[in-house]
Length: 319
Ligand SMILES: [Zn+2]
Image 1 (cartoon, helix red, strand yellow):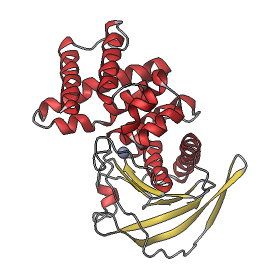
Image 2 (image 1 turned 60 degrees about the vertical axis):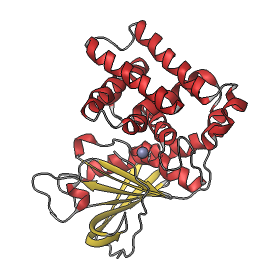
Image 3 (image 1 turned 90 degrees about the horizontal axis):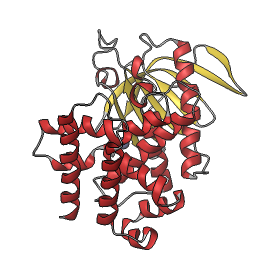
Image 4 (image 1 turned 180 degrees about the horizontal axis):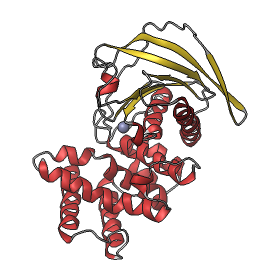
């Protein structure tokens, strides 16, 4: 799930096509090429070699899959269909009309045992990385299509040359929050089955996840690492809670994107300093919880832990 600035490039890809299958996807025919386990080199924080078994070309993305394992062709077609819609959604939301195809690498995690024990994509559990116009996700079948929109947003932001400067160029709190929010918005609109395990089945569930449950999960995790407040600030979910609050209550999408590009414009755009906006947002969450929204079945101790995390964020940002 951690996004790192990464360079992904295919150095050699032998497009030896063994067979063709054509499937209707609405008006778009998706063709899967069987590459016959070609070795493909990627450069992500160094180099490793990966086997690519399948390749498919869509309207919005170009898809590469590692060795099939229990990923049936039907499953891959479903994943491509979700991805096409997800990438289109992210492009539309961000106003990207460069028309460039996003390159996507899907790693099939097979824990028991991997078909290729040397494969990073098969053995690393549930991660995503993105760079300019491309991303890769490796996850178990039952978790897919997790974080597709999230990583697509990173990849498109890079294409747009956008990078948030809050809190620093390297600690992308606002960007991670934006990636998650667009992911949530896709969940609300899509007809695909999309991450209901996290977000529930309704907008109310999703907001409760965003403003309450995700915080409590973070608070518990961070109790294990109490000396690491930067981890807390870097939480994708707390960032998403803040970004969603701004989008819903403080201004337009265009306002937010201007703010995203340069947070020093906070007062000009929102008429408030960053510190004051964060204080207001934390108060909103407090009120949300007081109204009892999303807090059913959550022990009081976890609410306290979440409140502590909120306090830490304010302290950290005002330092
Ligand atoms: Zn990310």
